Image 1 (cartoon, rainbow, N blue to C red):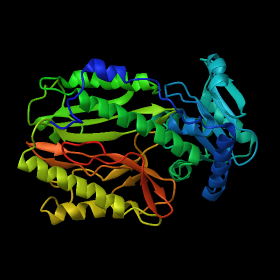
Image 2: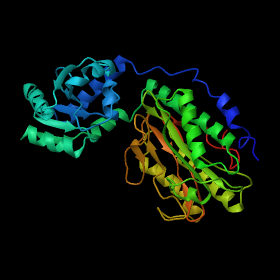
Image 3: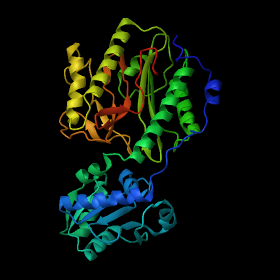
Image 4: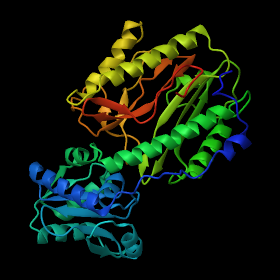
Amino acid sequence: MSPQIAHLSITEAQARLKPWPTRAPAIQTDEYLRRIERARRGLRALGAEALLITAGASLRYFTGIGWGASERLVALLLTTQGDLVLIAPSFEKGSLDAACKIPAQRCLWDEHENPYVLVARQMACRNARTLALDPEATVRVHTKLSAALGATRITDATHLIDGCRMRKSPAELALMQQVCDMTLEVQRLAAGIVHEGIGSNELVRFIDEAHRALGADNGSTFCIVQFGQATSFPHGVPGVQHLREGELVLIDTGCSVEGYNSDITRSYVFGKASDAQQRIWNLEQATQQAAFKAIRPGVSCESVDTAARRVLEAHGLGPDYRLPGLPHRTGHGCGLAIHEAPYLVRGNRQDLVTGMCCSNEPMIVVPGQFGVRLEDHFHVTEDGAQWFTPPSVAIDQPFA
């Protein structure tokens, strides 16, 4: 057995869990204000006078308010000029004041009031006639806004918001590095405690506890643990599995720090690999490296996906999404959301630029047998790309 796999007891692994010693600084007020100004420039380029950002990752990006969406409207109204306006229930004022990192006027509503009418009034007093709407807003929000705004045009703010969030600042990159480092350490410890008969649920529980112990925001944001044939399903199958000699282990998990997310997958063998497992693992490694080598500023997102698929097709897999082969895109952006723009997929002609952060995970699935996914994140640099986490070395050596 590899010295990286099955070499720890749970007690020994737990003893290594201590709060992360060097934490990246939180995003500061001046950076939030720069984001607001970038959004205002984007609004002018879009030909709109107002932007409404509802609760979720984008509200956190612009204000620091890390609230999820509910049936009650919580939103930021940003116009090309004038004060920012935060619209929220009156009883949330204290929580809002504590969470918000930027100066903004409060526009509060009581439970019997229609907050969408307040949005319309705020736009009218600013002479804003076109509203760009957060793409994460629900159908409920769009419907109620349409009723309140009447003839006011509502347009899609996807391009504006993605344009702001896709390119990470040095402060964001530092947070991404920390959160990826933390999850990689959790992956190392999880590999250390695997043993014959261990339940997938036991590993899920350990991984969540480990993320918490290291100082993640709320333990694991997600966790997929699969053994053997179950690894041939990209996002797993329900139920508890118990590990047997010679099976592949696939663990895909992440956590968040200050809202920024990790998403790292390791696939390795428990025991001795079969020839088929070894061949597919080596091909997965080569495919991940081919995608990485294709990355540089000015290259399209879809060309990275193409680079990965060419390796697979040269070895008789695919083509396209056919199995055995790669059933999904090569990667996705990551930041305040686990999956966000840009996406490394055919049809996405968006050019890569410095500061973009993405996963590189061209999974290979052999139906009815097993799957191998190696997933690490990178950020685009001036002359190529840089890994946040060093990729796996071998089928029995998942860590560099």
